[in-house]
Amino acid sequence: MRTVVVLYHAADRVTNIPRPVSDAPGTLPAQSPTLLIVDDDPLIVDSLRYFLGKEFAIVSADTRGEALKALEQREDLPVAALIDLGLPPTPHRPDEGFALIAELLARVPDIRIVVLSGQNDAANARHARVLGAADFVAKPAEPQHLLALLKQLLAVGREAVPATAATADALLIGQSAPMQKLRLQLRQYANAPFPVLIEGESGSGKELVANALHHLSERARRPYFALNCAAIAPSLVEPTLFGHAKGAFTGAAGARAGYFEDAADGTLFLDEIGELPLDLQPKLLRVLENGEYQRVGETQSRTSRTRVIAATNRDLKKEVREGRFRADLYHRLSVFTVSVPPVRELGDDRLLLLEHFSHEFARLFATQPFSLAEDARQRWLDYAFPGNVRELRNIVIRLTTKHPAERIGLYELEDELDEGGAQTGSSPPGLPADPAAFERLALDHLRDQGHQGDFSLDRLLRQWERAYINAAQQLAQGNLSHAAKILGVNRTTLYNRIETLSRTDS
Ligand SMILES: Nc1ncnc2c1ncn2[C@@H]1O[C@H](COP(=O)(O)OP(=O)(O)OP(=O)(O)O)[C@@H](O)[C@H]1O
Image 1 (cartoon, helix red, strand yellow):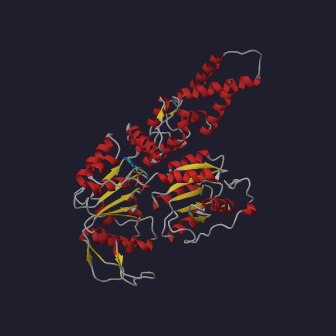
Image 2: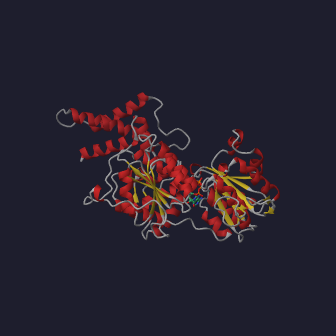
Image 3: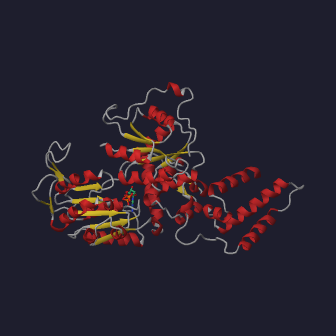
């Protein structure tokens, strides 16, 4: 998937590009946010470093493994990442890039990921967005455009932290039955003396739910600490949670309290609990059972009254069966389990979320919200949002940027959706059970076009093509992905053919 990319101005020759800013921390003002660039083409990396190095402290890597290692070694986590999908050892497939997106988000949930995609990777780029990438930019990329995009994405702030029970509830958008059930559970469990385990697919809102639980509880005015167990090196989890004595390990210059101590009688949210190292699990179990723990390097026991909320997008029962998670800890954590529903189960909440985010981002970008035409609205309701609210929110950000105050039709919307994500569980509507019926419908469409003047083979072939496309669209009720499936081509091909046909028509 390596493509030739021009990331420098026409006036700049490659040889004129100054030496890149070093990866080493400290070459820029301390407040420069960190940008991670992952690409196996050194020319791209150097060019990006040259143009973006004035605004960001650049960290680069040419493989997924190197990127994750770089993350572990730095204290200042990147605020954004530019990544190529095709990375070694499989540079011609997107798998490494896809895996990296998920891994980056697991470690740095707020990171804004932009995929730098080859011209022909539109479908992959769309799938990357489902996985949580904020946007994709086709190569060759204009550096000014990239910079503007990054600035805009970073202007979209972190989610507001709710200050009261009322706002905690209000931040959770949704009136569907699964959301009502979730709200009821949160109120029931808010003050229970047990941990709560939050389960849900990636991007479904587990962190928001943990926040809401804390603010609905009587601990709302007490500290709230969060640790993403996937985000830090395994060796640092124990001292971070429990603290350490002076000299307990290399670099432990002084004694330090851990999150259990700092959170005191507040709440500690352990995100990605499935990543908790096995050897640490008995220590977490002990503190959950009787409140006892020890700082690393100390023998004296301390006591904690912190309430633990844990979250996972893994099937923890399966992790237990496969020996990666202790059964006793699982049972202790899961006394109260809350399941955050995926967006595909939320029905009309998709429209509420759309309304909420489109107004929020229009305000932020000082513009007017867009609206959806009827066919696009229907498609919005049909789409499964495999990347859940995170994907939905990112789509709204892009639409707000590209079509401020506009009425958006099906084609503009289709461009933002993932080809493989069209199904809502059941089989696609209108897929022909009987291929002969499809052919009959196509022939009807062919007849509708009638005869025009002298015979022309080109025109005849276009008429057949148009007839089959119309028939497929009719069967798919306007759903382009389903129509593409019926026709046995991918959606981008279909889109291009429709465009070519309409150009020839006009
Ligand atoms: N019901 C909701 N109402 C409003 N915003 C929501 C809702 N659910 C999720 N969000 C927003 O969607 C984004 C993703 O949510 P969040 O980070 O909580 O998901 P998550 O399940 O913790 O993801 P991950 O599994 O990747 O950690 C956030 O911006 C969050 O504020």
